Image (cartoon, rainbow, N blue to C red; front, top):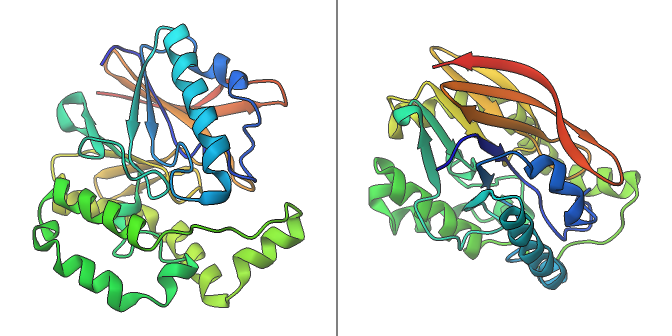
Length: 266
């Protein structure tokens, strides 16, 4: 991959509450990158109400990257599980691992209605992938299987804040699963690396939509957030031995690299 390698996650192109109304608004965010890694949930592969519009926007995104001379690397997420490849990449000789994040959790997205009451089905899928306990590639294949088998094919409509809050809070255990995942992503990210990538010093994820960085033992976990309300999106970039994390400036007309929040030397 050509440097700088810019990492973005959870664009959710075409979803009703994605803030990306026009792909062209992403041009300043793509410009200057040698490679852009789209770290899962880039488009709505599984959700019928959004799939057609999302597919159009995905094609526009690929064209935009080509116009800017940036290689586009797409990693699988629970909303777009069919990308080829293992679902993760390594940078800095494997000291940095980039993956979407659904594989960190036993059920992928335990806050989803389709999964909340499907513990037995999730267990069956684990039993069908016995090597997932210790093999990273098989663990990612299992995450894709869970995403496809227990996907949300229909979505409630309504964009008001009250409607979204109600949707997130009901049933109550849905909200509890969300909050638990936000508060524990540093810990579970480090445990995930202990099992599958013990050499990793940093893990870059999305999935949880909650941006930030956490130090768990010797390992740093970074979440680059989401372009879906109410959470904010951030960027990460690998270039010439430095890993940088920063904010994204948003307006109705553009998304662009904002202020640097952290920088680490490798």
